Each structure stands twice: as C-alpha cells, then as structure tokens.
Amino acid sequence: MTEAALEPASPLPLYHQLEQLLVKRIGEGLYRDGLPGELELADEFGISRGTVRQALDRLVRRGLVVRRRGRGSFVAPAPLEYPLGRFVHFAHEMAERGIPEASRILLRGRTRPAAAAAKALRLSPGSRCLRIVRLRVAGDVPLLLETSHLPEDLAAALEGADLSRGSLYDVLEAEGVSITEVIEEIRPVALDRAQSAHFGVPAGTPAFALERLSLAGSRPVEHRLVLAPGDRVRFTASWGHHSGGT
Image (cartoon, rainbow, N blue to C red; front, top):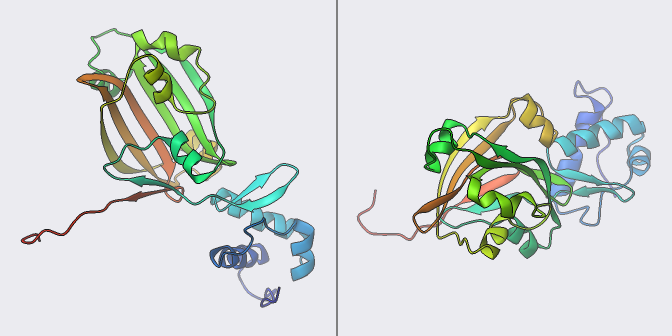
C-alpha cells in the first residue's frame, strides 16, 4: 500500500501522525478484514512497535478500533443509531446488524432509590426497588452504561435472570409485563472519572445521557438512565414537510 511517509521532523509526534493516517484509511473503507499487525505497520513506516502501539491505543480509546484477543485489531462497529420517536432495544438492534452483543452486570440488588427514580416510578416514601447497572457491549466496544430501577415486585423475576445477553424487556414480557409506552429525555453531559473508566476514555469526555421511563399501560415499570460517549451513539429523526411551518 503506497502512502506518504511519516515526518520525523514534524512537531506532531509520530504516533499522532500514524493515528491520523489510520483514521483516514478507516474512513476510506480499508481494513474491513482487520488492521495490519503492529510489526507490519512498524515495518511499513519505519517506526518502533511502541509507537504503533501508542497510535492503536489512541484509536481504541476513541472507539474507532477494537482489539480481539488472539485475533488482532479491527475497525469498531458504526455508532449505535437511536431513531427519535422509536423504542430502541439494544439487543435487538445489534442482532439485526449481525454484531455480537453482551452485558456486563456491574450491580444488581434491592435498594432505596434516589429521588428521581422514586418519583418516576411513583413509589411511596421508604419503598425499595431493584437496581441493575449494566455495561452494554457491541463486539468488544462498550457502548452504553445503563442504570435501571424497577418496582420491587418485579425483582424476583429479574434477580435470577440471565441478563448477560438479550433484553431486560424480553424477561418482563415473559412475566406478562408488556411495555406500551416510553418517555425519553436526552441531554449532553461530561463523563466523570468512574463512568469514563468503563468506556476507556478520559474523564470529562462529552457524552449523551438518555433518561427513559417505561410504562405498561398506566403503570411505570422501569426508570433507566443511559450514558454513552458522544462518538458511540447517533440520534436521528425524520419529519414530513408541512406547509405553513417556520
């Protein structure tokens, strides 16, 4: 593959130059079957493997590249698309795209909820609920950090359920609880140190916070807060044109 050489005399570090070049190649649709290995890139550009590793580490932190143990480095899946006005099931969306999905259960147990969750679920003072914290992963890329609160009477079904794959809503459906309405609010946030560590990005990374209330009929059954780095999700919307609009 022919490419302009890196510039050792440039004030831009070699690893940063290589990072930019690899981003360009990825944008051109190269590396669909995986990136070259560290040694191959080092030989191509006449640089050390350590410099190559620095560039790849930066691409991994940006969510553009994923490492698969024993297989090498690969271009990360495209950002998760959230069409506004449509209920998105993470597990179902990944299945449709042919991307392996998994959930790392970080916390699951009964607790007294914070005020926002208690109000959303219409819980009486002092009531307990089930809290589930999951890191949702597509391929090897952490995409979403989700904190769910559900009324305590739903805890028995969910405490023992396998939530490492698939949808929490499928478990509720099997228990006869069907989601009929979803209310969502999206706002920009900056990830704190603990949150950013789950995604492998620096503290203060811009992100989206999506707050969701799911109802079964008129009954609130889940309050969920979803955090996602800004480069790993994309919100889309479509409207028809109506005369007289501004």
